[in-house]
Image 1 (tube, rainbow, N blue to C red):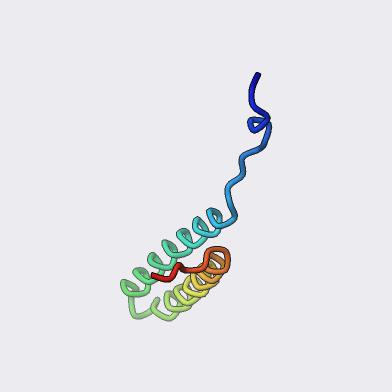
Image 2 (image 1 turned 135 degrees about the horizontal axis):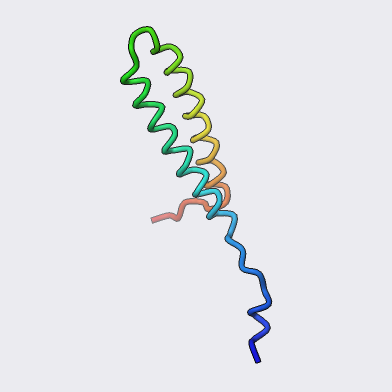
Length: 74
């Protein structure tokens, strides 16, 4: 007979979702930075705004990740 533990639903901890969100935001921010760097003079203003939006999203995701998993002192 299977153990009752098998009846429990496995759920990822919230910190896993926060890390995934941060990693996605970090990747998007990196791509936006590269797009800003490579933009033509005419497109630099829009590329800069897009980068700033992605940077803010990354910062928010990092804050949520830190809230759920504070850094460990070395």
